[in-house]
Length: 148
Image 1 (cartoon, rainbow, N blue to C red):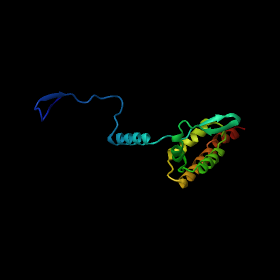
Image 2 (image 1 turned 135 degrees about the vertical axis):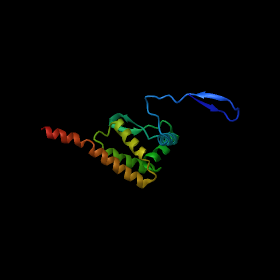
Image 3 (image 1 turned 180 degrees about the vertical axis):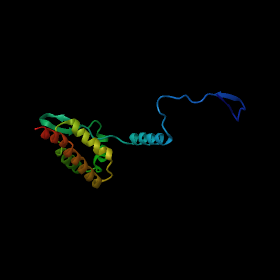
Image 4 (image 1 turned 180 degrees about the horizontal axis):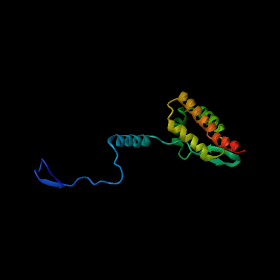
């Protein structure tokens, strides 16, 4: 226990040392990074969501039409609807199970997380995500072929 003196009131108060917890307390750098992440997370709208419709087609869900264009911009870096449709279609064509809404939502979430600022970055991110989609199942195929 230590005694602290309040300079304004000139009274003494007893303070105990901070309690030690089993959990590690965050450092100032970690706290700053967490605050930065929370701020960034509040500023973002989120990626476009998809749902499955008849005949194995997947389309965007416009839960709030006013949010659609900003969501599209955050995913592709462009507000041009033709650009958005083509880039998402190209990335979806790299998927092995492109009619799955979960996989389409994963793809747009991944593109959204990389935050393209313009169409050029949108194309580069689409290539990166498409390459990921093509390469990801290969270790499974290699393993299956090795067992034959």
